[in-house]
Image 1 (tube, rainbow, N blue to C red):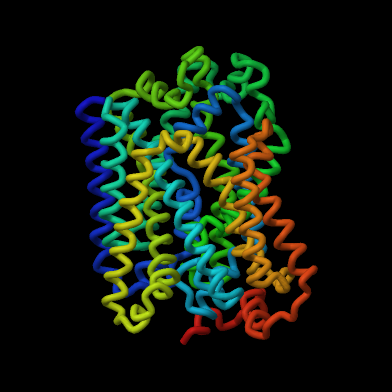
Image 2: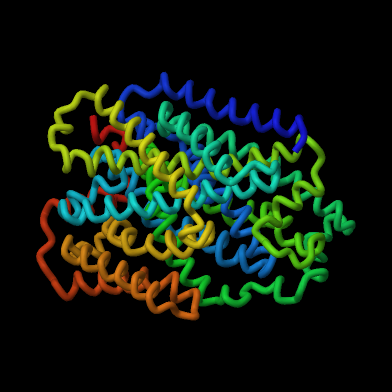
Length: 499
């Protein structure tokens, strides 16, 4: 990296911190800090949902898969996410916004107390928080790998740099800082992605037709929709996991819907995010698909994207691309920190320390910032030790994706009246069954990647759905009221429900 690249990166970091400082003066209480006061417009919420949905891991772990297996990456990742988010737009996203309007929630797990009971809420809150520490740590490690490729900076230094920057702006600015940085990061990502796309087309020498002729220069299996071990069964498993994740099982994505002004606004946001997932990755991933043409037999495919950038982009543009990679990672890690902080400060700490319920808005805002800082520090520590968990891919796929389902199923299906009979006891059995399945598969591993990733979620799903009907207990009136209110398609006074 040249001096101009470092200047571009420095200006980008300055932009992040400036937005954080602006948001600091906009945040008056915990509702502003965690849900932007319920005032997110649909386009900002949709872009933020999209950008928060993936990180620098795409350019490390996923770039390695694009190098070795080709187009299947788009099929089982971007396409399934786009389809999942589109389904969520129809059935789930509006309910999150209405939960804030009817129940005044600020965290995704807050409604679980009313829907189930205190033990269920606490189990999901505690396990989810621990899982997010691993997931976010893996994403910090991913961007540190890229920084190492670009500049020679050590992995440790890279993790600390990314972690500290995100720690500062999200701690002071909350969700407003997060979503506006998402928007800025999206613009940077578009500029960098299109630059790389056009540059690779130029280098291939086939003009616009290079989008299609590229595949003739690669191994035939790289153009297939499915490529072992990423089979059609694996894609279906990822579709299932991604539905529970992108509809709100991944807490920071639920916050994007919770923070909108109405159910219809949340629906529009989810549709926009879905469209972006269907289209933008086709451009974003193209240089990764082309990498084997320029670099054959790489010992470590995870560094392939970084090598392409250094090889083909001039000084200044390298810094722009690196800034976009930071953008992806900081977007997700910062939103994770904000949302998990909401869960800790609103759902965990008041149970452990009941006196917190009497605190003033000013004190609660201070606690929000302290918990955000603490969570971010823990993710930095996890990122520094990512090798103990199977590296970046191991943390994000083998751990997070496999563990997400068991805690996400009661959260997402609990929003639907169809599953009203599945109460707190059923939810706990479902979660424990999924976690035990995960543990068993770690002790007795299977050769099928689809089963390894998907079995915990499938077991939890079966237990949750069947348990409610087998138990067949009467649904409490408060649960029926809650589900009825958040399920209404047309609500004339959605904006005024809490006033």
